[in-house]
Length: 158
Image 1 (spheres, helix red, strand yellow):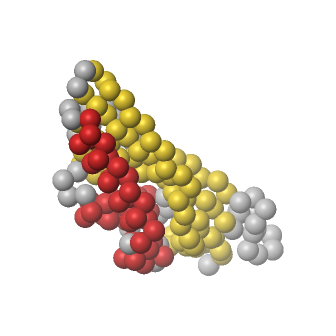
Image 2 (cartoon, rainbow, N blue to C red):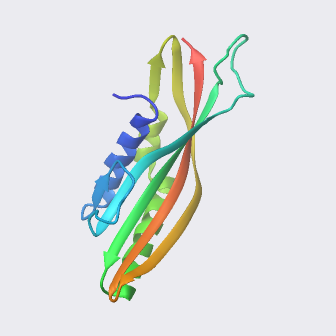
């Protein structure tokens, strides 16, 4: 199994592939050329908590916060149908992140041992969900939602 941040993406891909069987679920930012129904999952950044360490003399912060983005895109020729599908997908993503007990269980079991330390999943949160929509050409609509989540991990010596 891969380590942080990739192991989280692996778990999210598995979960979203199950919930969105008619969609293309990928581990990259979405582009206009991606399929009409797409979900993209990728890492955005890492913010170490420089003020927190779990043992005396630790240089590496004990708490890390990884930010991930989950995008969902719908392309449609019917504006109201496209908006309805897009809204349902965005709401489903939010519900999965808050309510899927299996995903939360699998995330809670993630650990990585590297260079004499162990990094463990600690908690997850949703920081925001933003929405874009546009008519690209007459009768061609695109809808995109971006859901930002954070994963907090702790690091300790083995």
